[in-house]
Length: 116
Length: 113
Image 1 (cartoon, each protein chain N blue to C red):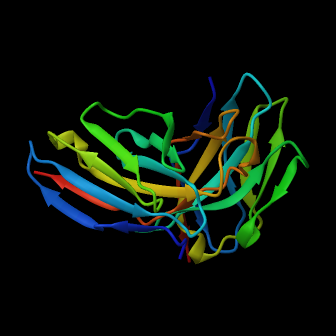
Image 2 (image 1 turned 180 degrees about the horizontal axis):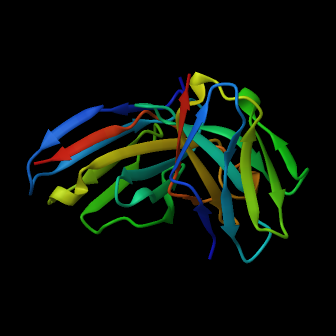
């Protein structure tokens, strides 16, 4: 058990809908990362938050947004869903960012999104 | 820009035989490199990391990797495969500030009795 909790584990929805994925990082971890894993794109970095602020952005679509709350949990919002958004969405956390960061991320078990 | 290429999408070995998973990297500066493992229906877990100290890095579960700058490689090895090693393995390079880990496409390791 990595200590990172993601909900829901599975989600089935229709095109055009909006969903919210939730992540609780390990106790004490300030950084939260979101990744998307799909068969055709592999594991893609979406976005990182550190202590409530956006720190780095990857291949995140404009239809997607995220935030980190004062209690350090994070939510990834996916809107106007398309079939191609079906994927496994991982949240990961780490202690810090920048020079003090060891490079080790602790991953949750993912939220599997299916868009029909 | 940093990138990693995993040279095999699938590797199949027999239990008790050596494992070799190949990874080449591209980086404009001395990189930090990692191997992560993903077991079925699980999140990813760090196996080992290289951060410019010893070039031979030992990780968990008997895995090790050697950083070879001249070959821009960071291959993962294990002397003797176990059935429990069956999983997907990702070679990863980080950017300078570690803010973003760049994952390879993954190598699926199958271990046969």
